[in-house]
Picture 1: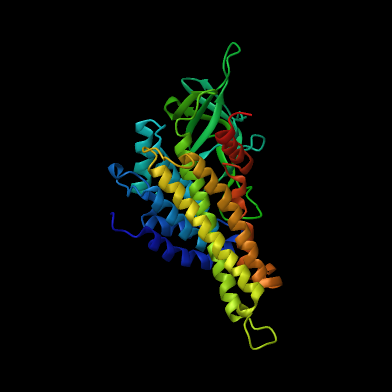
Picture 2 (picture 1 turned 180 degrees about the horizontal axis):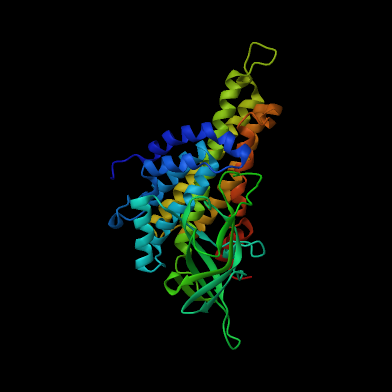
Length: 388
């Protein structure tokens, strides 16, 4: 198991995904065939622990795979990471009961079943900001009944396990609890509503998930905590989620870089020279190289910090602060890199027949995933200055 070059395997798949990406982007359709190929190649158990039959890939391998997939199809990469990061963050910060974690692992290993957390709501924004979900769970007949509507349910067309965040209202003026429930796609009262029609990452299948009197047995309660209690997987979740996002956008920006460089080497407008000889083009390409190298270095630094967190880092930022820096700065750097690539290609970069306009749209999507820039910067300010 340990001798598999997962990044190379991902690059081979990504080359095929790239051939399909224009169609899925234009249609806003879900790339079922990509996920079938990922399943056949063993990726569904990439981060599942060895004790449960997985490959237990470390964070460093996870980000290498995300970058490789992102270069082929950003939507597939972003959607795929929602499944794989779940097992990585649970390895580093267990919060699910053993029986359910075993079930998720078994499903991924034996059947290629996928899981994702379903937390976001239209009026809630990012749950990491501390908002209280409108989705309500109430006890009834020895089980639970859930009502609510979730948005951004990435992987909705193929999920087996929907891990839904809901509130349980308190009694006698007590504050509510926050809870996660496991819902199967065929549970009565649960349905996917195909609403996903976005600017970028159009093929992630991030539809709405609607619960209307959804009845669950008592055993579907996955976690429960007071609203003022920290989420036990919070730090691990931040590490795997944020760095997976950062690696994905590096892949998208790398694809834009490849397209712009290839274009510059071939484009010959009214002269015997290609535009690769123009000083302005060369400067932009050099700037792209700088931005990508910096982004990879920041992600690698954050990965090392997280994987070595048991040993105190004597100089510089703490691991979670490095992760916040890597996510925020990498997303901004990759956006700039793709914009520079668009300038290299020129006006034809706006044509739908060219993939670079899709890269321009896709690279922006993680701006709206946590840690959000404003919160990350406040986090860094508090670390340096204290509360304010």
